[in-house]
Figure (spheres, rainbow, N blue to C red):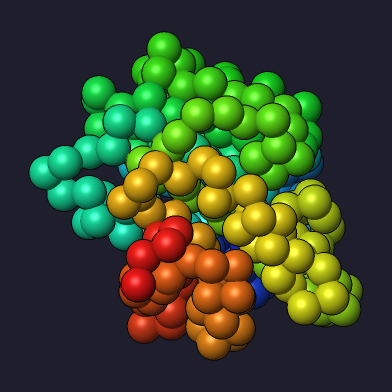
Length: 262
């Protein structure tokens, strides 16, 4: 079972994308443990994401451990980090808030880039908060990161120069049609955005006006089909759209806005 070509052939027969890379990673992780490797390989060809099998995912060139309570960080979400760094080039924010933090990947990545910045991450899931704290320790920013269990930004006090969120934004009726790797392995709390996919944004925008510093910015990841509905919602809640930021494929992925700026 520890033969690379055998693993590669098995993955290819299951139409696994990037089979060569995954074969190498599986072999590295389970080298010398044939039974564990066989189980892992079977889990993979059954549709479980490799990151779930390994228990970690790379994001912004950092390692983030996963749990069943956390969304698997996606490369698309790195657009949110890039947009924040671009907005605050040369003048890092003093305090940032990451709403619905999950693994903590967004907040931790930005704290890694901004060594003087302090951050708060929130999540409704106690398991996610525990994992985010562990990831902050792993990536050397625990002394500047606070993680709180709460619904969105309820009971959060103080002002923040930057508020970020990658909330659940998939309409409820779409969930059953998602890929197996998503609907069966990502937590439903991190996926389901309500009837129109915008419920989480409504909750966050309601709370944001009391949390964003004057002149501060809020950045939200959005779904591929929300480039019209989300800016409209932002304006409904008294905020002003600053820009839409596309991901690497050119799809609008991040909404940037401010409060009370016209």
